[in-house]
Image (cartoon, rainbow, N blue to C red; front, side, top):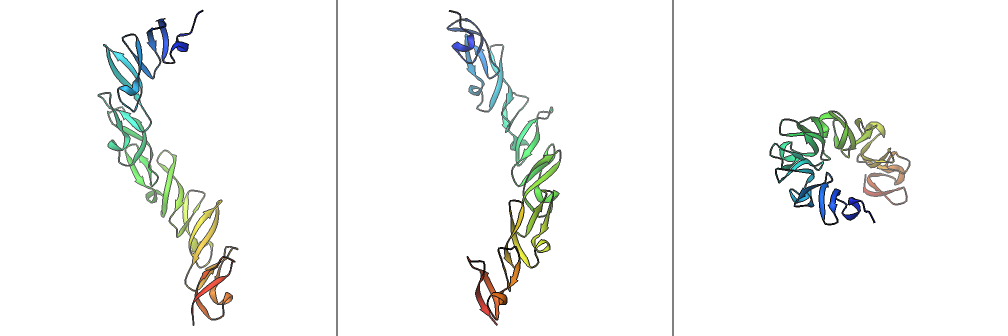
Length: 212
């Protein structure tokens, strides 16, 4: 019965017998009639070749780049705060995406989210050199992931807010007001006569903390 080489060993692409490989897939290299994983060269190596009987890495995982010495180095080693990258052709890293508080404003720079979108706390890469805001500071609300507007400009007297299914949810109001389930800030005295400071209760009303 004839067997495919890959049925004998998933790393094999060609073989001479059941015990002897002639060629390997991209994730491995040939040595002494065996296919060895590229990760034995470097844990982040994903593709490799045997050159003059020496294994050489040719590609790295997305969080690493291949330097001129064929080593896999972490993206952030060349570009601080960089998460994923490719080789830039000059021996360094070309950053594709950054960690959550940053975005790639340049091939070799990860900038704070709020440098592109004021008051943005967390962002992702929207396109070349463009940030996509995922979360604003708690005093602001993300609009279409392109800007952060103050909570108070959307809900009068609102101090802090958050996004709830892309709808604003006011979480606290200025002193003397409390947030309601109808997304409003209401005077404490409306709920409790002569109350000047309060907190919302679990029933949609207010719990007074200070009176006139």
